[in-house]
Length: 235
Image (cartoon, rainbow, N blue to C red; front, side):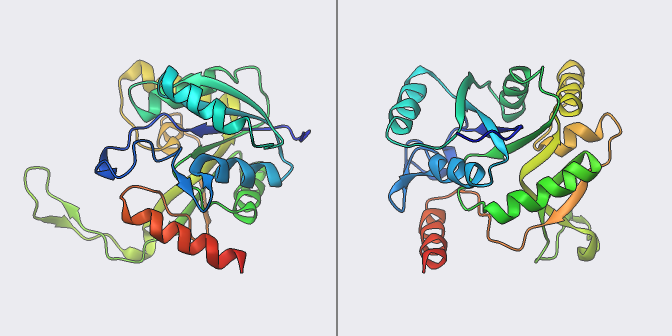
C-alpha cells in the first residue's frame, strides 16, 4: 500500500453514448486483458505518490461491477467510491467534497484515458507542486476553426501556436479546486474540464506538454488504437 499523500479522483461515472453500443461501459470494458479503469489505477499507483483514490460511479449496478473487478487486482491504493452526478462537473464536485479535509494535491483523471503513463503523471505533478495548478495537454496538430454561433461557418482561425488540447490528469491544490467547483455550481455555469472551473476564481493554470499518447476512448475504433499503443509499449 502506497504511503503517498496525493489523492486521485478517477471519473468512471460517464455514459458510453458515442460508443454506438459497441460496449455497454467503456471504463469497465477489457483492454489488453484488463478493464480500462484498472490501467489507470496501475499507472497512478506505480508512481508511489498516492495514498487514496476516489472513484466515481454511475449507479449501484456499475458500482458492484467495479468492486468485483477490483477484488482480483491489488492496485496498492485505498479505493473509496462516490456516486457521480448527471454531468462530469457534478461528479467531480461530489468526489472533491469527499476530500474536503485534504491539504495536498488532487489529480483529476478521466477513467476513459487508460494510456496515461507514470512519467506523464510525475511531470504534471511536478509542475503543480511548483505552481499550485497544472494540466496535461498537447499542442494542436490541426488548424482550429471557431464557428459562428448561429451557423457552421467560420468565425475565426486562432493562431495554432497558441492552441492546446486539454487532457487529464489535471492537478490542483484540493482546497482551490473544491472552492472553484463550488463557485461554478452556485453560479450555474457549465464547464467541460477542471481548469475551466479554476479560471473562475482567478488562479492561473500551467500547461504541461505530454509527449506520450493519451487517447480518450470515445468511439469504438479507439479501442483498437489503444490496444496497439499498449502492445507497442510492452515490446
